[in-house]
Amino acid sequence: MAAEMSGGDLSRLRQLNALAVIKALQGQDSLTLTEVAKRTGLSRASTEDVVRELLQKGWVTEAGATAGGVGRPARRYRFRAEAGRVLGVDIGGHKIRAVVADLDGTVLQSARVPVAPEMGRLERLEAVDRAVTECLEGAGLTGGEIWASGVGTTGLVDGAGRVLLSEALPEWTGVDLAAHVRRLAPRPPCWWRTTASSPPWPSAGAAWPATPRTWCSCWPACAPARAW
Image 1 (tube, helix red, strand yellow):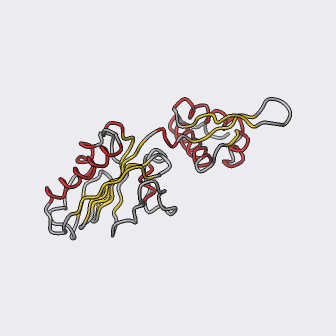
Image 2 (tube, helix red, strand yellow):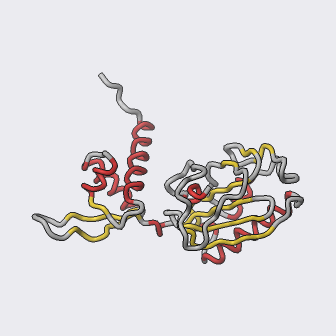
Image 3 (cartoon, helix red, strand yellow):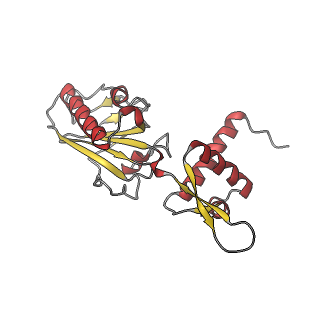
C-alpha cells in the first residue's frame, strides 16, 4: 500500500501545481482550463482547483470566454503580471543599479548610481540606498509595496544574504546585505547568488533576458531572479 502523503508533502505539491499553472499562463494572452491542463499535464479537476486558488490570491483573472461551439462558452484566464512589483539591485565596483519590475520581469523603472572600486563599505551602502530610493520614487512606490527583492554582488554570499568573502570590494566581507535591503523593502530578500560581473540590465519597458542567471526561493513572486 502506498504511504499517505504528509501535510508538508501536500503543501509542496500544491505549490508545484500552482507554479506549473503560472508558467503555462505566462506569456499567453489567455488560456482555457482545458488548455492549461494540457500544457501542465495536470488533470482538469486539479487545474480547476489551482486556478480557483490563484483567482482568490489575485494572481490570475478571468479574460472573457471562448465564443462559438456547443454549450456554455469556455472561460479563459490570464496571469496578472500587474498584481505586484519586485525590486532588483546590482551592486558592483563601478555602479549600483536598481530596477522595479512587474511579475513577468518587465522593467518599469530603473536608477543608476556611479561608484568607485576603492569606496568603503559605508559609502557603497549609501549608494545602494540612493539607487533604491530613486527607483522606488520614480515608480511611485514605497518599500512596503515591494513583494520581493533580489540582489547580486561580487564575492561569496551565504544563503542568509551575508557576504562571506569579497576580494574586489574594500570592507565588503561581512556585510549583511539582507538586513540592509530589509530596511528599504521590508519583505525578506530572496535567495542570493554571486555575480562575477554586472549583468546586462534591460532598459525600462524591456523584458528580462530569456536565459536566467540565478534562481530564487520565492519564485514565481520574484521576477528579479530572471535577470541575473
